[in-house]
Length: 109
Image (tube, rainbow, N blue to C red):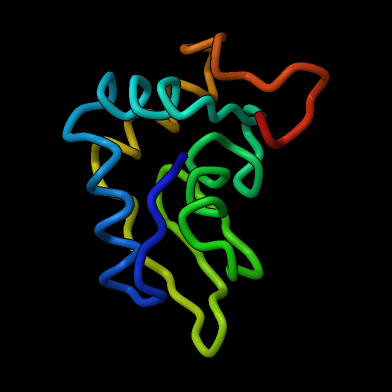
């Protein structure tokens, strides 16, 4: 089960930091949580699915190698993707971590 966080920029930053300090730690955390996603799909990648779980009230989440976008009640955020998450997204999108790809192309694992 994913921890829920305060609905704020600080909460999103904390949630992303809690994934880990390296690409491999990010993958391991997502794996441990049972979260999967689609390659090259910012709104349904494993990290986006993690953020949807961490912020149940989120209206939209998208994660790219450059930025994290989140539409939360009362605010819209755009943050630079932290390096460990950026490295994970880059690797995932080019074929790494096949065990984190959702079966049947579904966004949620």
